[in-house]
Length: 246
Image (cartoon, rainbow, N blue to C red; front, side, top):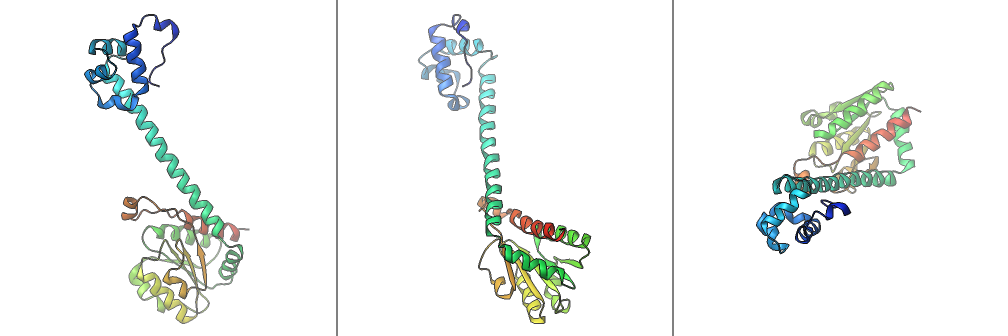
């Protein structure tokens, strides 16, 4: 409701002005696109009556009233968008936690603890998660290294050894170099662990262990610019680090 008239204030309003105020309160969403003449026609009054009613509601004129209504409507829309973002994040967290297999997490932990070197592979913005995971592992005393350059991945067969772990963080395995590195690691006998948000990717055939994260589909325009949520991968990385710190 745009404005609420107190009982004593109604005494200063004519019946026509009250009709204008009632109509405006019932049709707020239409007001920003209407002229004072259109409001008068819709409320079966005159432009002068509409103007007086608006001023008696505390506005300097129709422009100020339109601005207030538009601001309220924008706030409602923006609030809805924020709530949708919250809901998406909650859904991703729940889906990831529900999908995580305790036995799988413990097996990954054991591999990490007994590894000689840990290579963490990721591309694009997912590499930010890999960098943080690398940093946390190094703080805990592990030999962890991030590989995010595609050229290095193509020649990674020279790096991997049998007692190494190759951990791959990816949203949907859209980078061929990741699969190439997984294949190289498998050929030399290294342990391949995949952390992915989509089940059934071609990476799985080279993986000894696969951890799946849940992802809620984003707006298609957002996906076009490669800013899909990496929250599930953050949760997987944090779960592993938190357990290793115990």
